[in-house]
Image (cartoon, rainbow, N blue to C red; front, side, top):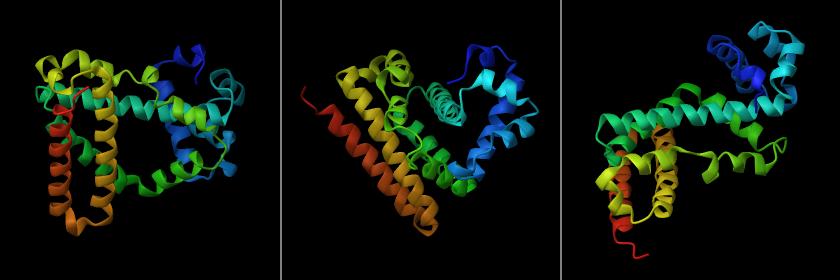
Length: 205
């Protein structure tokens, strides 16, 4: 993860460095990643780069963290817009995933290849998904008001959030791979969400 020195940079410079880093990891397999290309693209010195990050593995983990943060901010905005209607938010999320896949399918495949290459420890990736590293569920739980009662407990709600995101990801991929089946896919998606929410309501803890 980035050093304090990086975090003290202007947002414009941070974004420039991260944009250059994302391009590098999107366009090249892990064995061909070049710090020289990143610093040239970002307009910084090699020495500066190593005061911001330990190595290319370190910067890649931060790319993943930033993507996760951006998604969380979108989810918060959608929930605030629609009065915390989870189903309405999930409609927006599946469309967001679909559009990301359509736009950057090759980039995403490259990212997945880099993640599974063995260059990154499984624990590093898992750490991005741990409860203590993801405040989104806690924020949602705090702001849901009367909607909370249908989920019985925070632990059950956290499990539901993970499940909903997995459903969105799987169905978004289907939308991209089988566009002619969009209507049926969305109908299936809505049925899955409805059934799952109903099932959560009936859980006896």
